[in-house]
Length: 127
Image 1 (cartoon, rainbow, N blue to C red):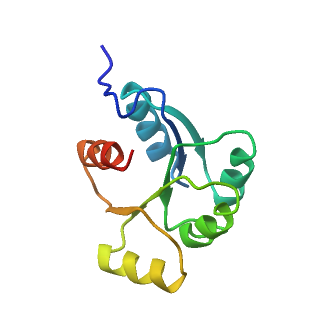
Image 2 (image 1 turned 60 degrees about the horizontal axis):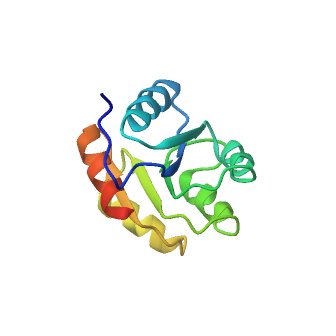
Protein backbone atom coordinates (compact mmCIF):
# COMPACT_ATOMS: atom_id res chain seq x y z
CA UNK A 1 0.00 0.00 0.00
CA UNK A 2 1.52 3.36 -0.99
CA UNK A 3 2.51 5.71 1.79
CA UNK A 4 0.50 8.81 0.90
CA UNK A 5 -0.96 11.72 2.77
CA UNK A 6 -3.66 14.27 2.06
CA UNK A 7 -0.99 16.93 1.49
CA UNK A 8 0.57 14.99 -1.39
CA UNK A 9 -2.46 13.35 -3.02
CA UNK A 10 -3.00 14.68 -6.52
CA UNK A 11 -0.20 17.26 -6.06
CA UNK A 12 1.96 17.85 -9.09
CA UNK A 13 5.71 17.98 -8.52
CA UNK A 14 8.50 18.89 -10.92
CA UNK A 15 11.79 17.23 -9.96
CA UNK A 16 14.88 18.78 -11.56
CA UNK A 17 18.22 17.05 -10.96
CA UNK A 18 21.07 16.11 -13.27
CA UNK A 19 21.82 12.85 -11.43
CA UNK A 20 19.81 10.08 -13.15
CA UNK A 21 19.89 7.72 -10.16
CA UNK A 22 18.62 10.39 -7.78
CA UNK A 23 15.86 11.41 -10.22
CA UNK A 24 14.77 7.81 -10.55
CA UNK A 25 14.87 7.01 -6.83
CA UNK A 26 13.20 10.24 -5.69
CA UNK A 27 10.64 10.05 -8.48
CA UNK A 28 9.71 6.52 -7.42
CA UNK A 29 9.44 7.43 -3.74
CA UNK A 30 7.47 10.60 -4.42
CA UNK A 31 4.99 8.74 -6.64
CA UNK A 32 4.53 6.17 -3.87
CA UNK A 33 3.80 9.09 -1.54
CA UNK A 34 0.98 10.28 -3.78
CA UNK A 35 2.61 12.93 -5.97
CA UNK A 36 2.24 13.17 -9.73
CA UNK A 37 5.90 13.60 -10.72
CA UNK A 38 7.54 14.92 -13.87
CA UNK A 39 11.32 14.87 -13.94
CA UNK A 40 13.85 16.95 -15.84
CA UNK A 41 17.63 16.51 -16.10
CA UNK A 42 18.53 20.17 -16.65
CA UNK A 43 17.28 23.72 -16.49
CA UNK A 44 16.43 23.90 -20.20
CA UNK A 45 14.53 20.60 -19.95
CA UNK A 46 12.67 21.89 -16.88
CA UNK A 47 11.54 25.00 -18.77
CA UNK A 48 10.29 22.85 -21.61
CA UNK A 49 8.41 20.65 -19.12
CA UNK A 50 6.76 23.74 -17.58
CA UNK A 51 5.16 24.53 -20.93
CA UNK A 52 2.97 21.41 -20.59
CA UNK A 53 2.99 20.64 -16.85
CA UNK A 54 1.87 23.05 -14.11
CA UNK A 55 3.46 21.85 -10.85
CA UNK A 56 2.21 22.64 -7.38
CA UNK A 57 5.81 22.52 -6.15
CA UNK A 58 9.30 22.25 -7.65
CA UNK A 59 12.25 20.32 -6.23
CA UNK A 60 15.37 21.80 -7.82
CA UNK A 61 19.01 20.74 -7.57
CA UNK A 62 21.45 23.64 -7.29
CA UNK A 63 24.62 22.24 -8.85
CA UNK A 64 23.69 21.45 -12.47
CA UNK A 65 24.77 22.36 -15.98
CA UNK A 66 24.34 24.25 -18.27
CA UNK A 67 22.36 26.41 -15.79
CA UNK A 68 22.67 26.07 -12.07
CA UNK A 69 19.57 25.92 -9.90
CA UNK A 70 19.55 29.67 -9.29
CA UNK A 71 19.56 30.54 -12.98
CA UNK A 72 16.98 27.84 -13.63
CA UNK A 73 14.75 29.25 -10.87
CA UNK A 74 15.08 32.77 -12.26
CA UNK A 75 14.05 31.54 -15.72
CA UNK A 76 11.13 29.56 -14.25
CA UNK A 77 9.62 32.48 -12.34
CA UNK A 78 7.80 34.04 -15.32
CA UNK A 79 6.24 30.63 -16.06
CA UNK A 80 5.15 29.48 -12.59
CA UNK A 81 4.47 30.68 -9.10
CA UNK A 82 5.06 27.23 -7.60
CA UNK A 83 7.22 27.18 -4.49
CA UNK A 84 10.76 25.91 -4.99
CA UNK A 85 12.61 23.56 -2.69
CA UNK A 86 16.34 23.68 -3.44
CA UNK A 87 18.42 20.52 -2.96
CA UNK A 88 22.18 20.86 -2.69
CA UNK A 89 25.36 19.63 -1.10
CA UNK A 90 26.10 23.30 -0.29
CA UNK A 91 25.44 24.41 3.29
CA UNK A 92 22.08 25.98 4.12
CA UNK A 93 23.86 29.25 4.91
CA UNK A 94 25.57 29.28 1.52
CA UNK A 95 22.26 28.50 -0.21
CA UNK A 96 20.53 31.36 1.58
CA UNK A 97 23.31 33.79 0.63
CA UNK A 98 23.27 32.75 -3.03
CA UNK A 99 19.48 32.92 -3.23
CA UNK A 100 19.45 36.38 -1.68
CA UNK A 101 22.23 37.55 -4.03
CA UNK A 102 20.25 36.30 -7.03
CA UNK A 103 17.11 38.03 -5.67
CA UNK A 104 15.16 34.77 -5.92
CA UNK A 105 12.13 34.00 -3.86
CA UNK A 106 12.81 30.60 -2.36
CA UNK A 107 10.62 28.50 -0.21
CA UNK A 108 13.15 26.23 1.43
CA UNK A 109 16.43 24.34 1.27
CA UNK A 110 17.41 20.75 1.95
CA UNK A 111 21.07 19.81 2.01
CA UNK A 112 22.38 16.54 0.65
CA UNK A 113 22.63 13.91 1.90
CA UNK A 114 19.13 13.83 3.31
CA UNK A 115 16.63 11.21 4.38
CA UNK A 116 13.51 10.83 2.26
CA UNK A 117 11.36 11.33 5.36
CA UNK A 118 12.89 14.83 5.72
CA UNK A 119 12.03 15.66 2.12
CA UNK A 120 8.51 14.31 2.42
CA UNK A 121 7.85 16.24 5.65
CA UNK A 122 9.21 19.46 4.18
CA UNK A 123 7.12 19.10 1.01
CA UNK A 124 4.04 18.40 3.09
CA UNK A 125 4.60 21.52 5.16
CA UNK A 126 5.12 23.65 2.03
CA UNK A 127 1.88 22.46 0.48
